[in-house]
Amino acid sequence: MNDIIMNKTGQEQTIEDVISDLGQRSKAAARELALASAGRRNAALTHAASALRTRVADLLSANAKDVDGVRNSGKDAAFIDRLTLTADRVVVMADALDAIAGQADPLGRTLATFDRPNGLKINRVSVPIGVIAMIYESRPNVGSDAGALCVKSGNAVILRGGSESLHSSRVIVDCLTQGLRASGLPEDAVQLVDTRDRKAVKLLLHSTETVDLVIPRGGRGLVSLVQEEARVPTLLHLDGNNHTYVHESANLEKAVGIVANAKMRRTGICGATECVVVDSKIAELFLPLLVAALENCELRGDAQARAVMPDMKVATDADWDTEYLSNIMSVKIVENVMDGIAFVQAHSSGHTDAIVAEDAEAVKHFMTAVDSAVVMHNASTQFSDGGEFGMGAEIGIATGKMHARGPVGAEQLTSFKYLVYGNGQQRP
Image (cartoon, rainbow, N blue to C red; front, side, top):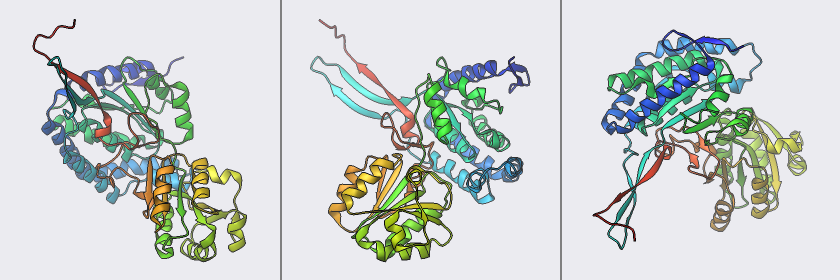
């Protein structure tokens, strides 16, 4: 028997009808949004940012209900941290909307021009993708970022946040639609799947008539579901099993600071380092410094690491492939940069990996050979973020290799088409 729920107009519908209705509304809104000027799209974002700042109390009250709902559910501290909003975090969300509004228009850009011998002039120009379904877990700010980036790039978006964050998501989407309304744009350009029914995710993944792209952002369970069920094209955001390799040429003080920040700044985000890989030639000098700096972090080391620091817990084979999202980090000792690259390539999720080194050749070799979406030198992996890349925000870190890779901002949410100009040419 199909579940009956209330749609946005207060009518009873099955979940199938609700998703179909959302898709049709989004498709109509996308056509209108694609024709809107950059000024109106930017105005929608600045109005939405103002709404977020005005409604901080409402949003925090709604978020408190979400957090209370999972407090005794067995969710770990990292999950609750991702779910929790504070006044400062709401300000960051609003500032991100303003930053996105201030960026150059990603639409209508001439990407290439071809002048053919027969007189045809061909332009390749950027255009919106259409309707994007964003499926994400626990972090309510993802809805704000995704909504803003889609509006900026002329796309309509259907947001399906985690059921745990539903109260927060309602307020956030209301602020975004308030911005759309104030700028004269269709409110259906940003819509929320306002139900905890898990069937909604599968229905979105099957919505080939109305949805042009699905972007999942969450754990392996969500990503696996998307990979198995999707009939709509997807842009995958996989987990962040990230590594920082400390080469024998590294400045040890710099390396300790980088690794400590990469692990502990926020342990529950996908840009956190989960494994530090250390050159054996500096292990006896570096590991005591690292242990002292990470006194609140559980370290799990291989036999060589534990020979230097016997109090480390034993790392199992499973540790090398684990995204902890907590104050736990594995420690692997390697003989040289080649071994370091081989280990990272074998265990990285392809999100973000880093090298700390002063040897230019080692840096070049590592950054060329490691096939991750983001590869860093002498910097914390926690910089792997759309805001830090100057995108204002991100809709996710794409770990695949097609269409977009790394932080996905407004520019990456566009496609292109060809405009061909002639003067009576006929093909022989």
